[in-house]
Length: 248
Image (tube, rainbow, N blue to C red):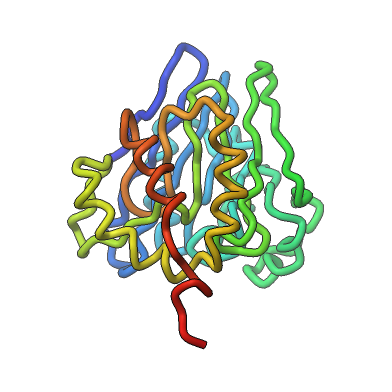
C-alpha cells in the first residue's frame, strides 16, 4: 500500500497515504494525509484527479469513505483539491478552506456550496466527537493569500502545506528527512520563489513556535521529525525570498 503510520494510539491515527507512482501528476509529487479519530475521518489535501484512485484505495484499508466527515484544503491549488468533485461523490464530507477560496473551488466541478466551511482569516478549529481537536493555523501568503496549516493536538503533527516542500528528482524523494543539510538543497528554490517576503515567515513562526510540534508534514517532499523539526524552523526563519531576491 505504501501507507505510513505517523502516529497511533487506540482511538487516533495520523496516516501518510503514500506516493503517486502512476505518472498522472508527474513533476508535482504530493503527499496526502488522513486522520482517523474514533472511527471518523479527516482527509488532508486529497490531491488532484490523477491521484484520486490511489488515495481512495489506500485509505479504504483504514476507514469507510462514508466515515470521512471532513476534508481540509490548505489553499486553492489544483494539486491540493483538484479531485474534490470525486470526493464529494464518495464521502459526505464538509470541506474546510479559507473563506477567500470557497467561490473559486466551484470551478473544480462541485456545485454543493452548502458543504463548504469557510475559515476566517484568524483561523479556527475542528473538534472530533471524542473531544480531540485540530487547529487551522493562519499561514497567509505562504504561498497563497488565503492559506492555513493544520495542527493535530493528539499527535503533535503540524501539516504545513507547501511550506517545507522539497523538489527531488523523480523517484528519489525519501519519506522522512534523512540528511538535513542535503535536504536544504531541494527546498531552497521553492521557498525562495513562492514566499513573497520573510516578513510573512516571521508572522507564521510566531504562531508555530508556540505549539508542541513533534513532526512537520508538508504537502510535497519529506516529513520532518526529531531534531529536524527545530532545524527546519530555524532554517526557514533566515531565508531571503520573493521580493527580497527578485529584480523587478
